[in-house]
Amino acid sequence: CESFHIHNEHHKLAKHIHDLKEGAQLAQVSDAGTPAVSDPGYLLTREAIANGIDIEVLPGATAFLPALIKSGFALHKFTFEGFLPQKKGRQTKLMEWSKYDDTLVFYESPHKLLKTLVALRDLCESHRRVSVSREITKKFEETVNGTLSEAVAHFESRPPKGEFVVVLEGVKYAHDQVEILDSE
Image 1 (cartoon, one colour):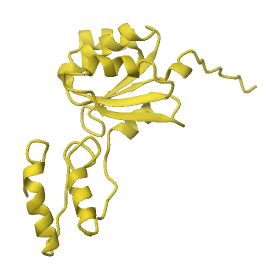
Image 2 (cartoon, rainbow, N blue to C red; image 1 turned 90 degrees about the vertical axis):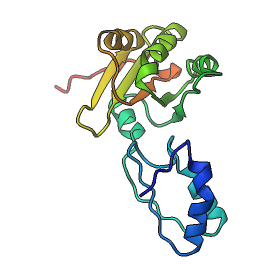
Image 3 (cartoon, helix red, strand yellow; image 1 turned 60 degrees about the horizontal axis):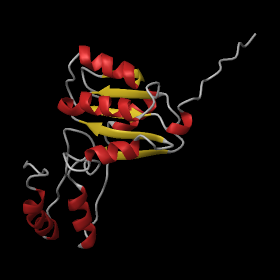
């Protein structure tokens, strides 16, 4: 068992490909979701394919799909963006996202969540809906559904802990109201 993460994946890649060519069997497991989905892993997969090495993918936990479903938003078309840029381009990306027509999903760290929600609230209409899930499939799983203003108020009173999936309702659905018909 060895670590393979963003800080060492380029360094370890050649060794792992060499070992695979020599007949070794490797398994990449992630403690934070599915490898290669906003997580190290795509480099290893890409290089294995380039070297004619067969790969096998087992379905596993990925936080964004349950968070999407828990949002209750239209999901026939959505965009998954991974993580926001660390620094440069962050505000530009948020401005771009505020105008997306379809549902948008992305990951956010606890120390940046409130700042990101405030920025989105300021860029979008305040009644735009958002769903914020944390610790999907874990002991402290929680989902907060509401407007951007309500989500900001929630996390101002309860400091964010854990890893978050943010699902932002698309612009073209922001004014939709579901009419519930009485079935009498």
